[in-house]
Image 1 (cartoon, rainbow, N blue to C red):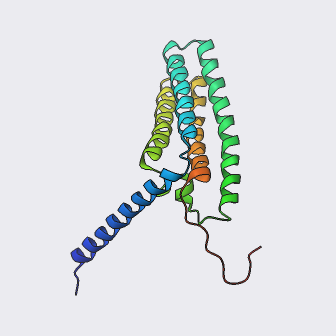
Image 2 (cartoon, one colour; image 1 turned 90 degrees about the horizontal axis):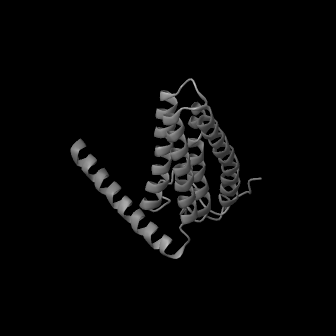
Length: 179
């Protein structure tokens, strides 16, 4: 009979084996499939423009700089709404043929190469940190619109997952159809 420690060790070994198998499957899959690099690059480019504009506006703190930063934040937020709808639509279409999970689609858990996850999550984290810090420093100004920008990072994650994520094909159903 196994004790709790043995059961835990066995579970950890199985989890490690599963992660290793998934990493190998991801490497094999993305050797033959597109990696969506354009989404990663666009995510970093938009993050870079946001960070530069918002930090400069926070430091300079004049009306013109704050206006530019606010308009950019609103434009990036508007773009995020469009990309989010596109990601939802593409994911819904893809879910008809693939077994998609929400965490795989929106958070890239076990569906994307480690470097892709790191880049898209890194850009999102930078958006969150810069928007919150700058909004805290200039909370009485339009710099606060920057807190809307991390929606763009989330939208890029969902778009990448919907377009490029690795998911198993949906198995043929053996019963009545769902309409």
